[in-house]
Amino acid sequence: MPRAEVGTPKYLANKMKSKGLQRLRWYCQVCEKQCRDENGFKCHAQSEAHLRQMLVVGENAGRHIADFSSQFQHDFVQLLSRRYNTKRVRINQVYQEFIQDKNHLHMNATRWVTLTEFAKHLGRSGIARVDETEKGWFIAWIDSSPKALAKQEASIKKDRATRDDEQRERTLIAEQIERAKLDKKASGEESASPPVEEGLKREEGAEKVVLSLSAKPVATSDTTAKVALTGLKLTAIKPGANPLKVNPLKRPNVFKSAAPAKSESSEGGGGNDRKRPAPMSAAERLIMEEQERKRRRMDRESVV
Image (cartoon, rainbow, N blue to C red; front, side):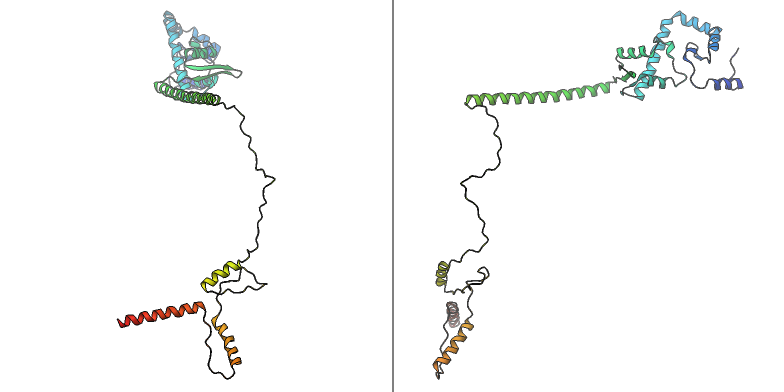
């Protein structure tokens, strides 16, 4: 029975029926035809077109199988590298994504009967790292491009240099330790345990530290002698007064001292109208002498 022409209702019906994935055992890779059931595949195998195509393949079956196998491996590895890169993933998951394309190359046309054999072949060829676990076979693509190899080689060199530096430092430290032990042994010092840190200890015979907040006594003798040399009078400190608030060097008021003297002279002298001059203090005497010297100097300058 000839095929339905494109665009006819029969062609559209066949397309709708063949939508989605079909059974792998009912697919003919030589003719690239997918049958929907066992009867359809049997009829296709007995058709003249299929028999003629099988005669062509039978002349060199090994070459055709090798071509199908290499094409299947190329497409599978390409999907693995682009989709997952070097990530470790289940091989069945990659295969499920691979067969979602209806026009993919089916495994029944290759040299591998099962997916496990194909995974082992990839591991032996060095294309991917394969390991078997309780959850199934896992696969990870090995990037063998020149750029990736150069990057990997640079990383290996860096790690080796780091390890060499660490080994060199450890060797140097070990040599220093050995040299220190030899020097210590030569000097006659015995290796002792490190001293134990002890806290602060108070000696029994140590003097006690006493803090006093009271005011220091005023040195009357020394202060009196100094004041006598300078000609100043000290102010007497009252018994109940605070010694810190009293200024012993405070000068007495001249006018207050002159007033009692005047009253005494008026009472004791009776009718004597002559007034006695009040005694001058040392500071006043110095002021008077300084004024006299200034007056004399001004007179000399005016004469000149």
